[in-house]
Amino acid sequence: MKSKYGITLLVLAALISVGTAIAHMSCIFFGPECFSAQMAPPQIIESARNGTWLAPVGTIFVSAIFLVVGLYALSGAGIIRKLPLLAIGIYTIATLCIIRGVLPLQLWMRHPDKVNSVVFYTGIIWLVTGLLFLFGFIIVRKSAYNKQIMAGTHKQRAPHI
Image (tube, rainbow, N blue to C red):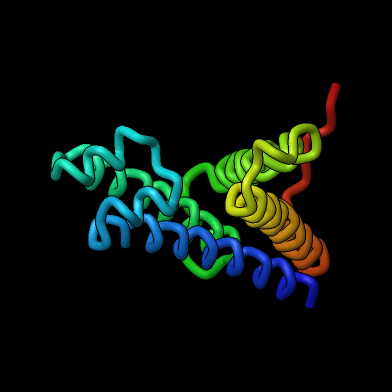
């Protein structure tokens, strides 16, 4: 029963990641104003205005990263096959999302005038996403381990000498 909670948390994390990829890709179609609204670096906005390759190629690259992050969440939930280095990947993603979420919040607490509402709420979303990854994966792994113990199929560790 608990594994369903973990799966739900990881699916939510996947939806946020895939939604972020879609939002980034939309800038290719909506143009410089979309890049500006999503707080892209000035070089990217200028590239979109000038029609150079930096903005679309960079956007595709960043979106691909968010899609891979979403795939890791789905893999951790057991919805798709197990991806390479799944545990390391999920814990790294969770850590990066939590850091990404905490940075604007700590800046807001120290200098509220330097953080606008978009940055503040984006920080909260990524903090929550990191926690979804972390706790979702912990719950799923713990449930899987408990099922192995109950079935008698868990691997015994060799004693330390």
